[in-house]
Image (cartoon, rainbow over all chains, first blue to last red; front, top):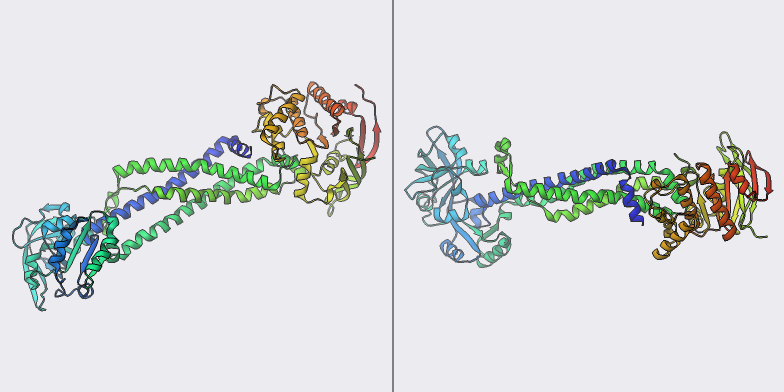
Length: 403
Length: 232
């Protein structure tokens, strides 16, 4: 019956209770929506980085990873690539010739990382071929180069313009090659677009003097959950090589996801803290308005633990009524926006500098519902303590006669 | 002679350190089982304070109160709440029912706190409400009842815990004459048939006329204590 009394007490002042329930619902929605938004943003960022730069797994000669010396190619790379191509868990594998160099147009020059690739293989591990803004992703002609839009702007070049790549060969000589721009891409990451160019692996190998040597093997798996297992297996098979997962290649990216949950809990905590004051205020008003009733209850024999429990129960019920509303609101809004996306093009310049997309698709975090609900319940209990203690301080003889 | 209530040299002083007010001043009072006693006196004479002290709602400055031989002035607040639950029924001037509960739930509530089983609670609540003439109002909330009906629910609630006695503070002050008559008849019947002890503070002459003992207080002191024959 205490539950019945507590529940009915909540509805004695409907407007006030609805305001509190709405506050809880909107507060939770705000917190959970932010979580969904940022989780969507971060996952898009990770997926973009994996698809354009990192892949799931990369294999290098350990010496190359340290010094980027073009002579440090992967021994027996062709056999490794062939084996991976035949692995049913692997979606795509691409061998890359990688060199640091200078790109020059008639008006400007910039430092870049040159990726010599096999276009057919690279298409299976990288999304760049699908992000062409002008031209095509290699036609098979000689001396073709694909560059980023940002780089093209800085160099003042257009599609089919000629540019020169200069780099150090395996013998230490400065070598240059002339290329024609076959395509201009624009990925989500403008920094990547500015720093990376693609050309044919064989042609680059010839100029570098590495011939068929490969510096990097990029692997994309069919299921990204298998990354660690697959990397472990590759490490076993190639103990002399450096096998790294995307989290090892880009620890800051892994760190973002790691600390993201904690940050979100802190934000939810701050929202709940603000909500607590609203609940304390409401419960305190409810208790002070009912002094006579509490006096009567204690007079007829309701002991202090029961009085305390009743106030806490009212607070918890009031708050808990807002939790499902907040969750349903979040599910509805996030599900809709997960399909249609949020257009952030007003901030596109700033977002693309960090590799974020213009359209953000929030991702619902259903696993957060339980901990957030528990946190809210705890906030309700904590909020009820002061009003409940206040109720216990009433003296029945005095409280009964309060108007 | 064994008394239900024994108060010895009972004093309650408000503002003892500033301007002391002797609400109750050296009162000695004994109440036997089955009494129908009215505490009368002008406003501020100490009737309500005396009832609060007897009912364990307040602690005296000096003196003691024994209920069935147990000194309640030495009890802790928590023990006193439990003692009240098991031994004393209260009827208040403003009815003080729980507004969110129906008449029968209000009566049941006291038994719930006594941890009585649900079935027994429901059965007893119906019986008590029938006894006070409200068998057709079991499921009505206080706001759906008249003042007289609410006060009868309060009497049923006071009886629900099977107390040793019932303290009623100005029980008819907010009632019209018909409701007052009705309530007094119920209380007198309970007193006569069930030997329920009633002590009430009142200004109401109709209530005083029904009492078998009238204790008059002036300035916190008992100035007269008379037994009287019932007028009706």
